[in-house]
Image 1 (cartoon, rainbow, N blue to C red):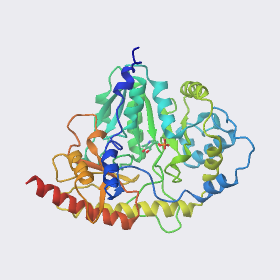
Image 2 (cartoon, rainbow, N blue to C red):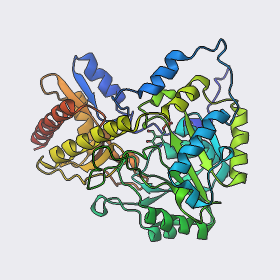
Image 3 (cartoon, rainbow, N blue to C red):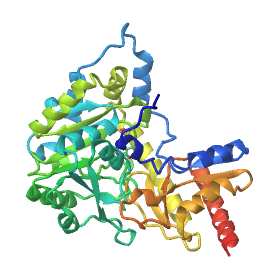
Image 4 (cartoon, rainbow, N blue to C red):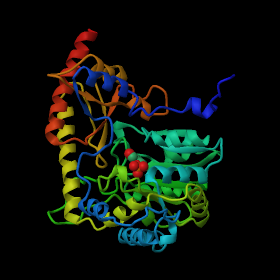
Length: 414
Ligand SMILES: Cc1ncc(COP(=O)(O)O)c(C=O)c1O
C-alpha cells in the first residue's frame, strides 16, 4: 500500500509569518509565562452593539442558505453606504448588483485574484505586504511580484515604481489602504496616479479597504465631527473597468469572527466571474449577514470612540518605541499596525528569544518578524510588525518588556 501523496501546491503552501512562532508561544505559556500578543490583528475592543443585538435577536427556525451574491437587503444597504462615501464620482452610483457578499474580505481577495489571473500570471504588491495575498496567489498558481516601499519614505508607493514592475504577465495590482502591515494611507491623488498606471497597462486595480475608518490625520477631527475615512477607489473617476474594492466587517466593527466581507466592482465581466465562483460555494454566512446589516447602523459616536482609542494607542506605542535606544519607528497614519526597526541583526531570532528564553516578571511579548512580509530576500531582516490591538496599560507594559528583552538579548550576544 502506498500513502497518498500531496500536490506540489499543498507541499509548498507558505505558513503564515504571523502565526509561525506560535509553538514557541505555546511553550512559554506551558512554562507559566503570560504572552502578550502583538503579532496578530485580533482587536480586543467589543463588537459594536447593533451587531451583538442582531445576533441575540435572530429567531428564524431554519438557518438557511442565502443567495450566493448575498441578501439583497444587505447589498442595498451597502450600496447606500458606499454612495455616501462619494462613490458616485467614480462612474455613477454603486448598485446592489455591483456588490458580491463574501466569506470575509479574504474570500473577496481570493475571487478577485482568481477572476483576474490564470496559472503563471503575476500580481503586483507593495512590499512589505499583507502576507495572505501570497497565500491566495499560491493556491491559484499565481506569482507575487513585489514593488519595494521603505520606512524612510513613509512607505509611499510611487506610481512610477509600480509601472516599472509591470510585465506582460501582470494582471492586477493589489494594495491595502490603510495598509497592513505598514499603516500607510493612500491619498485620493495617490489612488488616481496608481489607477492611471493600471488603466494604461490594462490591469485590475484591487484596493483592499478593510481598515477604511482607521485613519489618524495630523489634526484630529473636532469632537462630534464625523469619522474621517481613507479615500476609496470607488470614488476615483476613470477606473470603472479596472477598480475592484475589497471590504469586510472584521476590523471596522470589531467582528473578525462574523466572516462577512464583500467585493465591489463596476466591471460586469469580473463581477460575473466572481459570482460564478460564489455559486460553487453556495452562500455567504446567513446569520452574520443580518448582523452585518445591523452594523451599518452603528452610531457615529461609537465608531469615533473606537478610532480615537486606536489613535491613542498608536501615539503611545510609537513614542514608546522611539524612546528605546536604537529603535527607529515611523508614525503610521492608518490601520492598527506598524513596522519598526529593532537594534538586532535578526528580528526572527530575537522574537524567538523573547518567547523561549526571556520573561520580565513572568510576562513576555510576541511579535511578527517582518521578513515574511517582504518578497525580496533579505529585506525586513531587522524589523518586526506590531499590531496595537491591546489596551493602553498592556501596551505600556509591552514596551517595558520589549526594552528589557532587547537589553538582555544584546548583552547575551556580546
Ligand atoms: C489588509 C487585510 N485585508 C483583508 C483581511 C481579511 O480579513 P477578513 O477575511 O477577516 O475580512 C485582513 C485581515 O487581517 C487584512 O489585514
